[in-house]
Length: 320
Length: 297
Image (cartoon, rainbow over all chains, first blue to last red; front, side, top):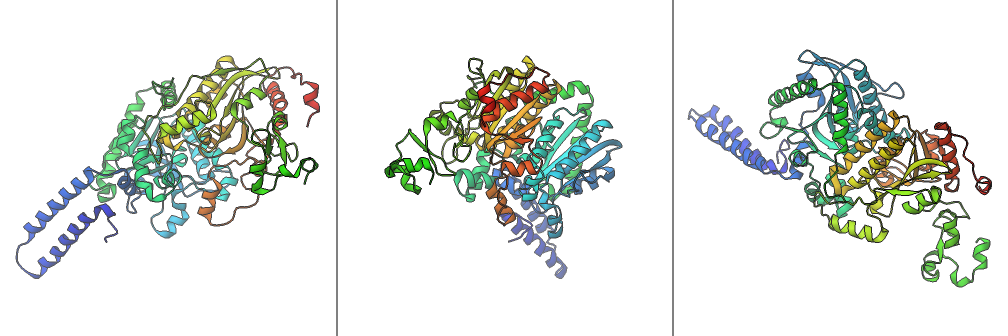
């Protein structure tokens, strides 16, 4: 099994392996098998297209956590200039699970805040698998309030399994840290654009997810609890995660239908990790568009619209 | 064995599991902490606080508010709101059926009750979570009723009080329930902007999405004694860190020590404490606390 491919992608992996083999063969003989390679590549593309046209919620959940998926720092490097990372909550510590700082998006000054997972084992541990502790959320809060003071639009990037469930996190008030961010973000007098780039895990995601525009990469997920967590509570078995993923409706497409997010940002064929450059271009354009959209709204209207938007979540016609 | 137990005929003395068969249903209760057998009417008079060991047993939302507010002053707000199953959610059971069952068991339409009234003469809006309704979980109706409550406080320019008892977000409403965290926090910001206080009373248990939103946002955070309060459940934490949790972890005393709550207040003192604090914050005269209340401890 090719580990660069998920289980449901194995037919694609097999074809790709065959193409690789053929490439080696060409060195040996003079027979022109380029045609054959081209034919197989087309077939591989077609196969990918057909597999990706009918992904289940569970398969998308696996894509959102793909080990090769671009993380925040991968995007920061490619999308922004003049990035200066700012550290610490000024009270306790710096939490590497959240990265924040000032930068420019095509010359325009902005504030970036987002979750950061680790790529190798060492970095995963250092960044706590992208699960922030209270000081991470308090650093985010500090930077958001700074952005408000200096009239910088805030771009947040969500990619976390959830807030860290640990003894130290509880001691330092994980609940309060998350709650405080929701409270402050709801009335912050600067534009906020939130983008789910991978996993949107519950309160740990929402704590930097209250904004004027909520975007999701096509294969991102956003949910109140992980499919495994939901399955083990409601089905009493984590094996039922695929069912739970389906029932909760965690995909960008489903959440768009429910009007819980604004925009789906399309990913390259096979997912963001298969063509990072293409992903970067699409994401850059989308962020610029959103910023221009928000520029047209006065700050008073913006804050009022943000408030009203959250007020109508879960308000249905037939509640009485 | 307490003197009270000794008075009882051995037939109805509590002893482990056997008591279930010997205590007549409805007349007697047993304190889950000190195991004392209590006359139910007496227990109710003490607001479900064990008179032997002061253990705070759970109290229904309706009884909570009715006993907290001055009688004759309270009126319910948003009683007509009832939940819908927007996602047609189904796990081992349909969400719709779970709702019907919970409504039948509790007599409530969802897990939050809102009342406007007075507490020792101080006008307030008070809300309480009904833990017996699907673990007091926060779905769209809980969120919406909390909005109604806070808006009523803003409109009448009076303080807001919330007694929380909740396992967290309601999974069957998926992302809609997560958004209730943002929604309830956003309106609390408006309450602050209107210059009105919010008193959050954390009762056993207050966890997950409820503690990580409205419950931790009090100007004054009050915990009932020995309540379990936290973000992640103890079992989840134990599985994550793979070590035994310290004694008293995530209990009220732990939160007080770590600076998360202002004070721990006995349920029987709650009326006079909150009334007194709110009168100060609202620049109102000192509430006339009835003598028998002032003396009771």
